[in-house]
Image 1 (tube, each protein chain N blue to C red):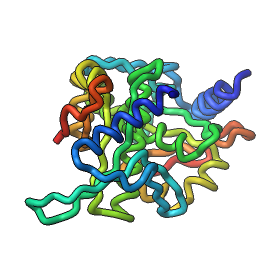
Image 2 (spheres, chains in turn orange, blue):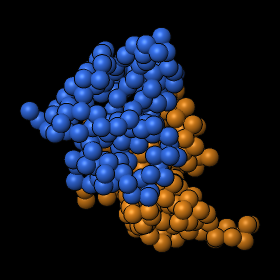
Image 3 (cartoon, chains in turn orange, blue):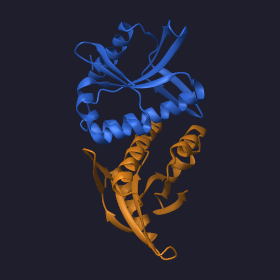
Image 4 (tube, rainbow over the protein chains, first blue to last red):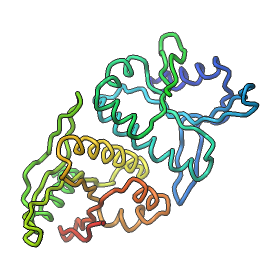
Length: 138
Length: 138
């Protein structure tokens, strides 16, 4: 299986394990003359809220030659996907899925932490070995 | 000359024609554990303001297979470079240099216009044939 698909399938399986239903793989959005594809769309009934929660997930492996370059691309995708969703599905929350080892190293750098806060990025940290979601932030 | 260098040199020469001095090619920034390189740093004495104006320019060719993908990357770079400059050189303005044909087609799409406004992107539109800057926005 190509490396990209391993990361994709890990996040997908991890979400299913947590009770999410994958509704779109990928989730396509058409808005303002542009077409975009976010890796996954998922939903879950939250009993306590008596409501259906919807998310969109952009899955990143951060396995490229340059982590900062991968981060530039991830930020740009997140900004554009969030802006597109604001127009088409304002109640769907967007998450960036990041492997645990990248989160523990690169994502602890001061600049990256400032960026996450400044751009209000939502993160899902996943463990590629155990095929689970380790943390949701926030 | 590789295509990338043609775009790079066009913008560089166009800035020089307008009286800018290229001070950095590329402009490197170290901030919060991360190192980044913006394509060009330039400055110009503005007589009326009796001040030196400084800019940083990220040069894009938009010649990739997917224009929206190139735009995602450009947005991410712009966000991160601006955030980095805010910490290191708050008076230097960041610009995204875009070829005229891409500006006249892709950048007129409603989504892209909304994005430019929402993220407050500064643009330099350049003519690759005439080797000049056509417009600064804003």
